[in-house]
Amino acid sequence: MNAPNSQLAVKGAIRIQNVDKVYLAKSGPVQAVQDCTLDIRPGEICMIVGPSGCGKTTLLNAIAGFHDITGGSIHLDGQLLCGPDRPKAEPGPDRVVVFQNGALFPWKTNLENVAFGPVVQKRMTKAEAEEKARRMMADAGLIGVEHNYPGEISSGMRRRVEIVRALMNDPKVLLLDEPFRALDQLTKSVMHEALLEIYYKNKVTIFFITHDLEEAIFLGHRVAIMTTRPCRPKKILEVDIPHPRNYGVLTSPRFRALMEETVSAVHEEAVKAFEAGEKEM
Amino acid sequence: MASGARATSAGEIGAWEMFLYRFSKWVKSPTPYLMLVGFALFFGAWYLLSEVFRVWRFASLPGPRAVLIEWFNPNPVYGMSLYTPDYYVHVWSSMRRVLIAFLISTGLGVPFGLFLGWSKNFRQFTFPVFETLRPIPVLAWVPLAIVMFKAQETPVIFLTTLASFYATALNTMLGVQSIDESYPRAAACLGASKWQVFWHVIIPGALPFIFTGLQISVGVAWFSLVAAEMVSGEYGLGYLINTSYVNVQYPVIIIGMISVGIVGYASSALVRMAGDYLMQWRVRELALGAGR
Image (cartoon, each protein chain N blue to C red):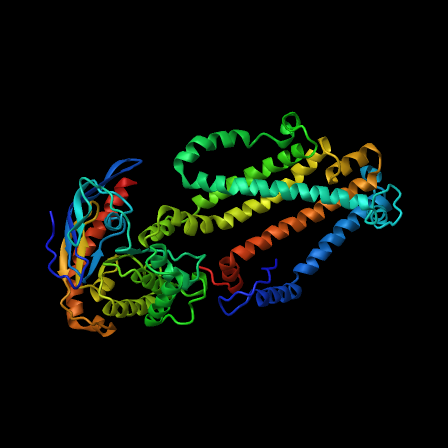
């Protein structure tokens, strides 16, 4: 079952078809994802919004290859990542994850972190990789922190280094799991613009999990609002605000209208999740 | 707590500047003076109890003045002081044994601990055995050690290695288990193979715990060494302490004890320095106060 590979220039079409994921918890089997179908277009920023614990990360883990799925299939550019015969995808540099709490290696300098991918894949020598890393870091406004360790720079900078580390591998897809969750509101707004700037320079597909609706509408081409467990798309919103965007968008009437259109759908799921959570306890 | 004088090409702050900075801070802080006060109080109390007031049980204890006079005596009454070559033979034999035992226990314990933490299968079939052997005290091994190793030196080294090995292996295992799941995952995403993950993530990630283990391990090595030397072996500080007791040379006992204390302190300081050297990232994070 091959998806049509319409656009060759921009890659990174993710086809999620009827995905199920049941995992065994102490209290018994839990259906985290059920019959989830979602087509992510190559080169788009697709925002996945849903209440905490709804199964968004389970979906991301399946695409990244950290977990298996129990039903359905996921394709990347027509190639099977995981399906009935191969429940767990192999993690690889075509789909790089940026983690919620950050996963820069604290024992490597920022430059060594960024150069890590091409070196371990043996695509480049260490010198070549560090040369490219320096250039990409400079492009992302990260100058003068190359030889610092991640622990020595601000959390906002750390996120940027981590995104650059992912982009070093020319991935088809960036999988971002609430990357800015731990940042304060001001740093977050700076990071949003920085991410967009990086995105405009490197066309990749971005699969971005968040529970912040404003963030979702500001960044995304589309916003997929997920139901609470089991997770599947409830509503898919086309954000018809043209890119490139800047923070001025936030006060535009269109932005407000889109917020209003979605806020009730998100709230509904949040209430459901909250009540389900109470029952489980 | 020196970080070692390594001129790092990385970063604006060299290790030597860092050392000077920390040393000057240390001198200006109350720490060194409190340390001196602590030692003064300890020796003062000992002096008063044993030599001045001769309180009850302390009366039979040699006082610090007697010990120091003997220790620094060119013609020691009991034949053991800083001026006698024999003293250094004892210190050196003990140091050599601890060094050998420490190297063996580290060489075996770190890889063993890494595999314990890394491989669930390996842990499942070795850890129960490990945990059964671990509580058996070193002294209980003495007869077997003597039966197994006929020579003078090897049983002592075997006994000294044993307890250190447990401390190193256990802490290394905990170190591997403490590594945040995201790190190996991130490495796998970036295209690292299983062995590359082991080398670039598991080993450095476990390093802080490994060095905690090694510091415990040198300490444990010293106290099992002294115990082993008391029962078996010739020369060594443990042997010196035991024979001085048999020959009723009480000040020498205390000379031996203080020597163990000083050499033991120095050896764990060396391990700490080695740790700082290998974990520059932690030294810099702590020094700059850039916490998470």
